[in-house]
Image 1 (cartoon, rainbow over the protein chains, first blue to last red):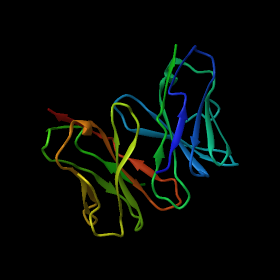
Image 2: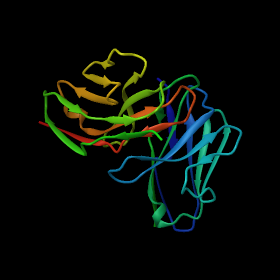
Image 3: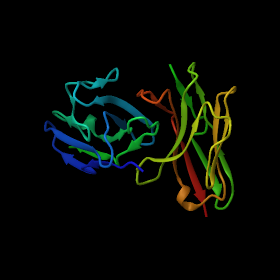
Length: 115
Length: 115
């Protein structure tokens, strides 16, 4: 099956700093990747759709200046949480769909804790 | 807008018994896919089973099977011979078409398999 790698698995940072999370499709090309946020005991909340070579599409209520997404290649998308604050602490998950494949494959997630 | 509902926030089942998780959805689309994803304590999202809406035959994957009732817009998951490793959050999800980004997740059902 298709493999999506997400790094780091967890990160602790000070308030005001920026954190970058990487999402890689290891054995397929992904023109589109998705970034989700998940609060404890809740479902996945789509934050944005990352499109290779173009600007990301953000869901309503998601601050695009705080959550910067870059999809510079067909196998890599990055999410940068800028000037992180404690309220940004959460579990972030990326996912991707191979071309002409209806299934969604997920990274292992990143737990962000902002002190 | 497409919605997915899971009316059972929590369920439990004895090991080796059978359990059914409910899911209903609402869509005006004719072509769509339905999925069940599992999220164990590791928080890695794992695809359990999928169903194409145009197929009447219910999908089966080993101990996992679905009861797809298109007219009723119902998509339940049956787990037979439950194992301790089945303990997880289970999310029902829908997707409109093969190239779109419209994955919609339900709120999830927390399943506990008891020894």
